[in-house]
Amino acid sequence: MEELKDKSQSRRDFVRNAGKLILAAPLVVLPVILVKKSDRKGYVWQIDPYKCTQCDNCKTSCILTPSASKCTNAFPMCGYCDMCPGYLRQGSKTINTAAENQLCPTGAINRRFVEEPYFEYTINEKLCNGCAKCVKGCADFGNGSLYMQIRHELCVNCNDCGIARDCPSHAVIRVPASEPYLRKELKKG
Image 1 (cartoon, rainbow, N blue to C red):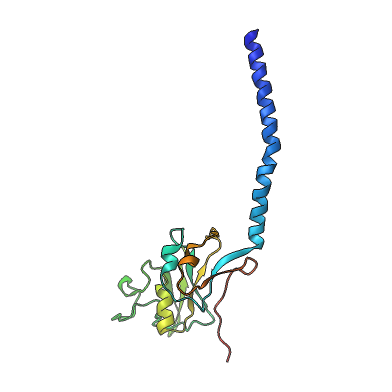
Image 2: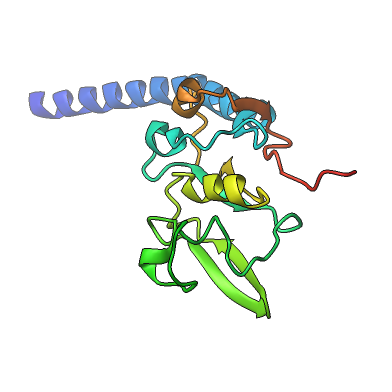
């Protein structure tokens, strides 16, 4: 009988403790939900394409591997060049898609024939590591249609962004989450 009383006592304690936990859970969960909702309405990190100097810090400073910053092509600006300076390494002896001729170390840029003499260059974001070598080549010898962007489906929106902290040109800034991407466009006039 004594043993039965101990079990019922422990059940009663269990129910009492479970009740306290159920009452306390909303006090813990509700602030977390509210913080996540406020983040969506707040600000996110982004790279200003007009300030970026293609320094390679996006690749090495991001806490994610590979980096949440990726190359983007502004197709309205792109010249669809046969010899794209963001795709082909300077000094290449031949214009072809061989790995030794490509500027991108991970092969993230895909070259697709459109019509003579035009090619379309698209970025495979899964392969892009954020090194900005293609962006630098395009800025130095091309029309600057390739630029860096922080991809928000990958970014964890660190409070103290490592890329922003290490950016020498202060190109990484906070922008409203409602308009998270700064796009490069053709300049008028």
